[in-house]
Amino acid sequence: MVTFVDQVQVHLQAGRGGNGCVSTRREKFKPLAGPDGGAGGNGGDIVILADPQVTTLLEFHRRPHLTAENGGYGAGGYRAGTNGEELILSVPVGTVVKDSAGETLIDLNEPGLRYIAAKGGIGGLGNNALASAKRVAPGFALLGTEGWAGSLTLELKTIADVAFVGYPSAGKSSLIAAMSAAKPKIADYPFTTLHPNLGVVQAGESRFTVADVPGLIEGASEGKGLGLDFLRHVERCSALLHVLDCATLEPDRDPLSDLEVIKAELGAYPVPEGQTPLLERPQFVALNKIDVPEARELAEFVRPELEALGYRVFLISTVSHEGLRELGYALGELVEETRAKQLAEAPEQPRIVLKPRAVNDGGFRIVTEGGTYGTIYRILGDKPERWVAQTDFTNDEAVGYLADRLQKLRIDDALVKAGAVAGSAVVIGPGSGVVFDWEPTLTSAAEVQMGARGTDARFEGAPRRTNKERRDDYHGMMDAKAEARAELERERESGMWSEES
Image: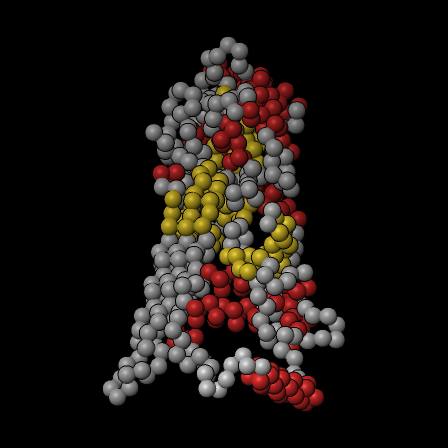
């Protein structure tokens, strides 16, 4: 049965915005008193919150598909739809949020940090908000847009000042229980600890957090045992404490060989770019279980050799608590020094500079794509894509409103510059998008630019006749009538017909 999960993929669906309402106000003696349709409500966001009361991602392992509430529809009488309630996902402090490509979006390394992982859709405007001097009674409303949908990876990396590392059953969990108020599961068989345990240690004026990392055996960095899943929890620790078992009954193990194996696994684990490699961090050694006479004798024997390697060595017993006070004060001193060093070396936070949008930035861009059936002009941008999503294409008035909005962005001019001609295929949005056969509007300056220089395409096909041309046409018509009468007279005189017949 799964009791601890430190990496999980969640599938999120933010709430959809509600549609606007088409309604007409009716009063006594005023059956059509004007539009009163309300706007739809916004869809609910999905927020990830760093909660210190949460210790595992197990809930999302069991329920990975999460959906926020949709926004309510607008109604008549100027009534707006309700906004969808945001969905809060409480995760442990130290959770890293990554996108589907593995890129880190945010590191929730402090309690209370919030991250909007999925933004809800925007509610559509009702016909009351769309009314204007030229559009007195709109017969349409805008649709609500879809909320963000996608998958994210949540990865937990335990936040602790000191990591206890060592072989299974070396006494790491017992050491945490002896030095803090933590109550980890303890037994005399390997892999008793199936998830990192945290404990808070108070040593004089110093207060710091310790964690044990389970499952480190030879080959852990290559996927053996449980170490590969839990080595990531060492990344955030500023110091390491090697807990070595001096009372092991296995004939091929001793404290020195155990230390070399653990160091090899720590050195083989790649830390993220910018972080100090694990073996370059401060390291202490704790020779555990000296309450056993043979273990004490072995610890005193290997202590000089470990000190010669540059380690500060402590002989401890989690049963009798011997040496724990000295170890706690030494770790507290080391943590305080490390914190002061990190504070002094902390990079200065960059200033936030707000830059206005460039004057030549139209809010969209046109990408030319070559296809089997000719060139396609794709329009990409937040505004045009959102406007298309809000349009009810079954309503001609709504489609006309969309055309007016797009024209305000001067999309026709941009299409002409990109090489589009009347009848070109234009797609708004990524993927399949919405496809149009482009017809330039007559009021656009782009229509003028499409003709030859010095001409105006708007007047082509309807030239104005001069007075001479009108007289010539009239005289030609009169001549044709006179010729027709003369022809009839000749036929009568030749006997082809008579007035009596």
